[in-house]
Amino acid sequence: MPVRTKRVYDTPSPEDGYRLLVMRLWPRGVKKESVDAWEKDLGTPKDLIKKWKHGEVDWATFSKRYRAAMRDQTEKIQALARRAESETVTLLCGCKDADHCHRTILKKLVEKAVKKR
Image (cartoon, rainbow, N blue to C red; front, side):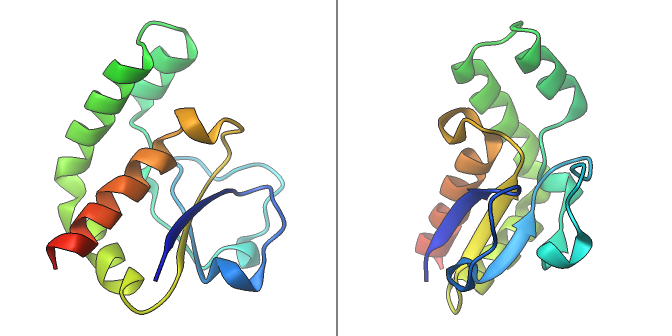
């Protein structure tokens, strides 16, 4: 089944399957019933997001550091990979730019874990 990404503020749809919020902080205005689960630890570490938002790191550096941080979350990524084998998983975040958002990197990590299974 596919792993998808979506902005948490977009309207939920049946095609989303399992909706997982992957942000450190709960987004304003989002109701808890609009997501199935919340994994704060899969969000961007505070120091890294701060540097990204202030322009102190470029996308390549951000990506490398986020991937390094996710090495500590291997069990959670493996659990998502197992879930993705049987149902659609949609990773949710508040970022407007999906091409420069950690959820896109996380999607690739989960898909890689699925392929290894």
